[in-house]
Length: 227
Ligand code: CA
Image (cartoon, rainbow, N blue to C red; front, top):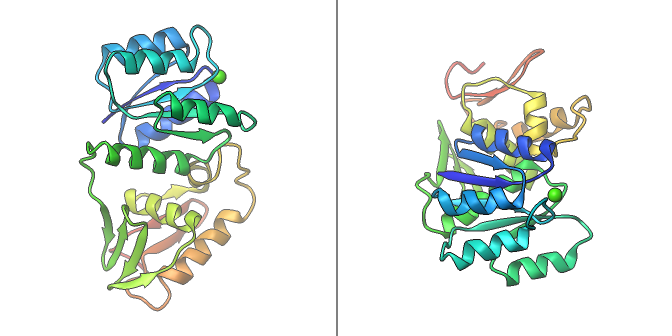
């Protein structure tokens, strides 16, 4: 699956590129509207992430050019908080969804997956599993041994991240940047608290225990070798 990002703010662009690459997508990043349209019409992308305010032609013109060429890949608009009319205009001009900056990466990833699924192009499995734990990506549900577990949106995103990278010790800084927004201060104990709550819901009262704290390093989810 290949994604084109058209974003002139370098920090946001590289943050998105890195996150999407880590999630397994092929990613191209360009920084102005003219390159954006050129890339979108030259290569076969499954999805385009498009900032509105760009040097060169703006996001609207890029979108128009894409649709005029007959290409129907989903387009996700990035818009500033105060530009409500932009969102309406974006959806009217053929964008499929929009996100208001600043946003958490997990939110963007969820939108991207939904758009790709809607396009019927996702070959990704709808479930993530470890031992008797099952996470249903489509219906946003989690169960253990068939017993439904209710999670908040953040807890769900956290569990999804841990499941996708099973067996890997995930540092707090990585969890912070993926689940909270990019400027999140990872020195706070928010992550610790969130992990504790998540474990209380999906590990307490079940065997085997899946989430483990690796002291001084981070957290890991694995179905074997749990203590
Ligand atoms: Ca911009």
